[in-house]
Image (cartoon, rainbow, N blue to C red; front, side, top):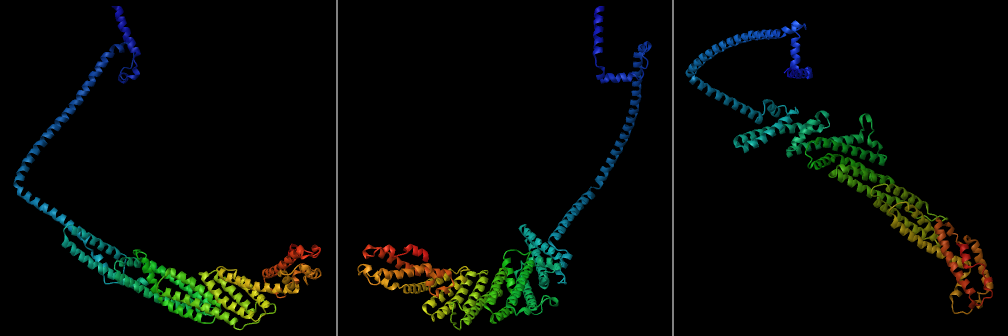
Length: 621
């Protein structure tokens, strides 16, 4: 039995030892509380520990009891108060029931009045909203219908927007079944809208000419955008603007011509009227800048308008604005064209008109200004060609005799220099192909006739050389430019014909000088016997001919006609020389073959000829 007790005790001790007291929060708290009153670890203290703990527990319970009694007293007090309140409420409820039964009729009447008041308030709100949405305020009406027509503020556009919004909302009213109300409001808004647009029209008509003024630009452009929906009013404003600007640009152009700028700077354009090219340039430059500025102003005036058909409106407006400047310009340009001038000066005027017509017509492609510029260009082209024709005729009016060196006369040289100058200018201009062909035709046709007339009074050889020299100068002049192929081909064909003539003369001269005529005749006659037996074909006679040929081979230039040396073109000279020598070489080759032919019975034929045909050809050519 004792062993068993010891075993139980041992288990308890082990359990206590193995217990992790520091992890047991309740045990730790108990020990902490114990440490507050268990201060001495003695035998007596340990014996009294249990009684102390029980006594402390009793004190705690007594303290709890006292606290709970205080709570109970508080709850009893609250209960009594609630009971009194319940009694008071029941009393009040009984009195309310009594009062309610007495005032039931009054409450019903009050409820009816309250419902009517709420309905009236709602109706008033609806009316206010309706008025706010479908009517204009007094300030807005004053803006639209005010007497001061020429005082316009940006608020008028907001009012017009409001009017248009009301008109759109009336359509919704009509769809909702309120046709009468909607129609009345629409009629009223239409009246207001017309009054506003009329005021806008009158103001814009008076101020549109000052569209470039920064203070008015926004108002004017917005006004034009609004008036675009009233085509009649819009057109009236555009017409008024065009009339004002036409007068303004015409006056400015006249002042630029006659008075110049402020204080005479820049100087009046007409002070340079003595120089046709500068005079026309200044006028056209001024017009080009002025028309471009007018387009800028018109575009600014219409910048907020609907872009559909806007280009046509701008173009038509510019055409009207520029009408006034056409007559002064035409009078002055016509005067320049009618005054005798050099063809080169008139051609500069033609190119100026052509260039600025293209520039200006890019801006204004219709109307009087286009017709005027086109007419001036066509007239200037006619005057230029007529003046060029007169200038050519004046230089060729008297047919000069060719100089002794058969070179082109001074008149021909001067005309070719004039042609070269004008073609050089035309080569850089617009429409150059047409111009260059017409210019070349105007100068070359009379020139060729004059050259032919001059050459017709000369002997054939001189005529051929003179024609070749003249046509060489013409060919050289025309070959520098495009579009001259057809005329160059004709000149080349005429030159070839003259070369043929000169070659024939040169070949005839060589045949005569070398006494080849009888020999050639004998060689062509096939009826004779051996050539060595024919009179004139003896070796001794042939030796004289061959000696002349040897000398010709050593000094080929001495055999040429004096006129050939006067050819300006070395190519022509070489061509005549080669073709005439080819004739001689052909006869020489035929003679060489005939002498070597055994049929002709020449003894030791190799000793007769010093050179073979190939060697002679090499020496001559």
